[in-house]
Length: 471
Image (cartoon, rainbow, N blue to C red; front, side):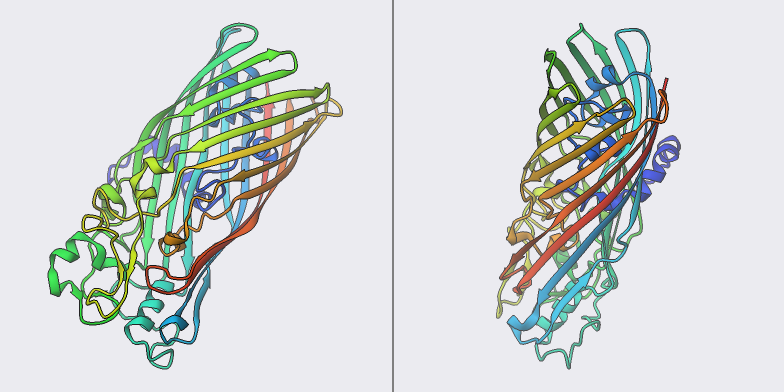
């Protein structure tokens, strides 16, 4: 989308330009938590609101946090690796590369204001997620080169590639920023409800995907002039105009989040929230990459949880979240499948005739809906110090059949451990810290859509720092 939407970019650019790693981030491509306090609890805050950014999970929680301003920064370190093994077709080397750009800084800001003793309004801006990979060695191009000339690395050594258009440095960069305009209402002493208008902004670019031009409608329509059909695998002789290497494109949209917070007893609090899909405008410059002509909506999700005051100084929280990745075709549609030689179109192919890239049923990343389970503890030994720890476990969104495309977005993380603390030097100021480690996971397949064994893996670390001012 080419219109500037100046106020959106003015308020969102910093986050949108720095949050890109969050996607291959944690729970699929959603962030594990928002702000240092939330991250210290592994995101388990739907029934235990912490600050003004709690609206990112449950807007009803604003009724509990008072008037405040919160400003934070996350240093995020994802380590991603992709491998294709060419020995299966006569080559004698593995195409392996680690994505560079391993450090990202992701800010978040929130503010709340009490209109009266029952109503609180708030505004927050935060990175929701994204995808980022940058491979200096284009694993797709090198694998295609070996398949096209299987005499081995003497003829097609690593780094040479096929020479087809748009097959340089491989990678994608998707940045998602959300802005929540929230209101919370305290219905009575034990029940609070809230709602938030969620405004989304996305920026996306892709590089080095030229080997998949034959899987787009425009190149297929050009027939033999568009694809080389006599070799193995099928390779493009002309590029798709809307698949790759088109610079940054922008997308905008909106959705709704609603929530409830209830104190069942003096020691038990429950919370629930639901976020609709954030309906986004299309990435016109990449209309032959994403399904539905460049559509990339942000999936719906819901969260429920309970917090128990185990002792006067300790809270225990348990959260369950479900993210509906299958509600977005560009994320959940199946990826390419392998057609073996001697078929003239050997190599990666659409799983169905109407599944060309960019079509309504076009190929995607093959992600499934996932569940996330969180447990956290919060210990307050005195008025100045609070200590936090949490653990989160989520389903694997990626199956082995879809490893090839997910080299661009290897969101394979399943387990996260977090710790953190808050120090209050006085009654109005807070300094908070959190550390997260996401344990290494790997997804592999004996035969990717190139017909080659392939694998993706990742592990992560992050550090959050924030300052809060209470009024």
